Length: 204
Figure (cartoon, rainbow, N blue to C red):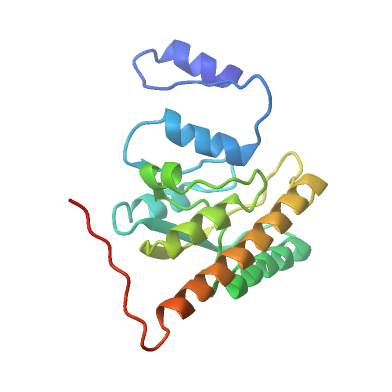
């Protein structure tokens, strides 16, 4: 925070705005709030733990505007433990199995339009918020491009992926995905009943 304020003082002409919450809202809710506060058409989360090299930013932004979602997937992440890699693959497998999608990686900080983040934002506070947003958009027929990128394990601090709060939040999100998928399949089944005329609506 001090560095941001220092930067603002040295560059008063730059459109940099610092918003400080009175209480910690968590990463997911700050991500959503940032979309409402921000301006512009496109939106992407940049984490403060410096896990993405410059080449990853270039690869993502090079595809700006080519689809509703630009979804990075990690092909290399030096320093990440075998357990963390297995946990990530398990999470991706579960989300894909539940939703019927074939996304390679859900937590790669996808590039979205800011409107989509505001319109289809997640209700969760844990690390599953990116998967929740992506699957909501896929249910709406959003287009996407997956691009291979590299990452690096954080050098300082500890990951909060395995905190009790995050585990419960992710479990809740997965349960919600199951309910949404069941509702979607049931709705399709009703629409495909033989001999049933399609329902139409009109407005004046």
